[in-house]
Image 1 (cartoon, rainbow, N blue to C red):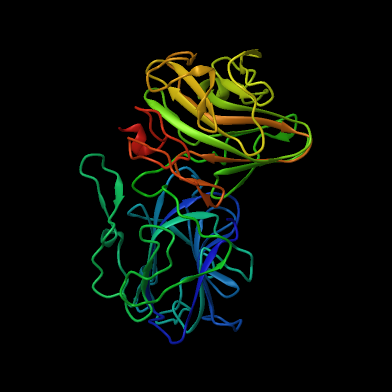
Image 2: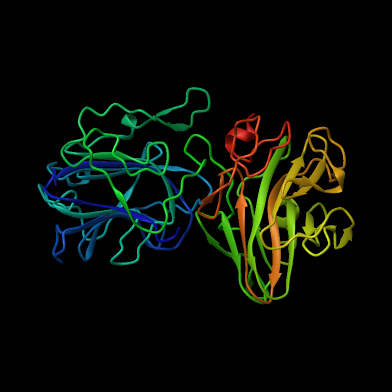
Length: 444
């Protein structure tokens, strides 16, 4: 949730001059100041408050009380990918540029000064006795809006990213080292969020964190397998009305207010292969119209300045709520059944045989069987498709998108169905030959 953060109070000082933070981050928002790590010892003077955080300009900063020491020059606005962020600090260095270093995906980042580099031998608030928060600055409502994984704090040593990751010899991409060798985490060091939603310290120090607010939810999305979520930066305005709904739960829930058509589409798409997803209608009121299905992403992009509605565009296919018709190119064809609050709509797209299938609460519509290819709706070949939903309401509408993360909002699926691909967790059985829309799924 947007206000979820972890907290711990340290009773004694660590090394306040030298430390390393290493964390894998999937950001779910832009243009908002959001904390990665916040230290607060309770008095408003330099050396008592320090933050490692995203600024409202989408740079990353290391800051102190009432000032920011250093910013990165690059801006980080990709809400679809994982970043490996490392902050390496050693204020004992005589050369000021060596006192604070930022790395993203093993690349040292260019920096610009705010108030300037910390003075030589400056004692920061990392890590002084006091309260520390991960992904939150509760005093300033600077909550993270992140998915986080493998969070390390090394007290007393300034390390480079090579401790925590390596370059893949085949792809050349920076990849996670899930069991790094750290010679010493120091007194106040810790390693949390290793393989799930646990604040239990894996460093051996027993410096455990607890949830300070919100709900800490486990997800299949991780640095080694990036899952589709709802795209947070999909687009433009039409007639002054934002196309995008409000997003929650790490961009896996879309919320629609009153009186406007809005769309939500997956961050990942595909032009071949077989993929499955689930949409749960959480709550509705007022008059509403919904179309759940798939978009041709090129057709959508070409019409971004007009009305790029799932039901109106050619090569885009949406199942209508009221009657189960499939709409494309502005007209509907009888196919399935209606749906409403509480229902889970499954969508299976077969891009090898150019067929689309829909289910309601685990029962395939039109007597279809995606596993053997019967009863599907024919779609245009040689297109790149994303999952999506188009919606209009005079009241309120909330839908949870499960692209394989295994949750509807913050609640795990009640009894996971079978999934022969072992990629993703869904409420109902995944058809044979289908998988989740993720980087691993795209490469099966």
